[in-house]
Image 1 (cartoon, rainbow, N blue to C red):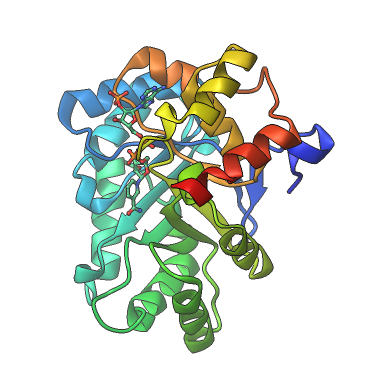
Image 2 (cartoon, rainbow, N blue to C red; image 1 turned 90 degrees about the vertical axis):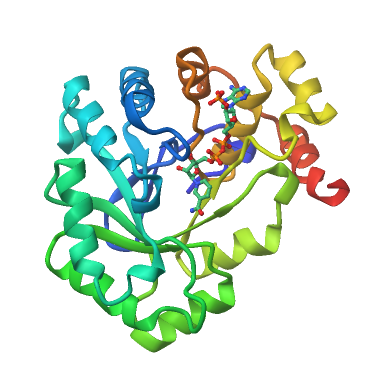
Length: 267
Ligand code: NAP
């Protein structure tokens, strides 16, 4: 993965440990359901997003499936993630098959344990995940909301490291040791809620957005991409959906990247 801040190049895909290519930019679908979920996801697909993030608990997998059909985009061109709530332990494959039915597909590209179970790190759940990968129902398997220690415990128990850890991430939460810790383990850090928490109102982000003549959200999304971190902005607004994906026309300098990194020290 190239860091564009230092080299000028920007990779838009990352290779996961199972060999799949994952687009660094995806469309998040939390808190959109029903017709709104269909419309927003169609707008995202028409704006060029080829990576969609959903979950069993979002209760919108059927709408995401409908949007894919409506958009006319080929399934082969898409990267689809869904997630299992750990409370479904014991019924993992059944839950995945239900997700596949709702999404109207025979596999997901990435299946995540949505958060660690109340006790332990989910070694039994993880065995079912490995089986789903063997069966071709999930091309890649990963976790969400896990600490590096929990990931190490899971990997040691199973010999199967997760491909991805999806965690809350933004300039306000930047932690170089977290980023490096994931990289050392060959695990892709996927950020969520990157536009939340007041980051769009921070003066560093606003200053850069004025200088670059882009929106604050575009600055934050570009910051993720230049760090090689997966980012999955969600919006229900078609103009924002489009703009959030339109981030290839400018590049943050090393100074700007570092100014954004430093926001976590004042947060
Ligand atoms: P987000 O995408 O960072 O931010 C969404 C919020 O920002 C919405 O209120 C949205 O409002 C607003 N927004 C979007 N684009 C904007 C723009 N250009 N300018 C100003 N405001 C903008 O937050 P998120 O939905 O929490 O996280 C992203 C995705 O990550 C989720 O949708 C979900 O797929 C995933 N996620 C995963 C977990 C997990 O536990 N694994 C937890 C949370 C989220 P409008 O809709 O009105 O535009």
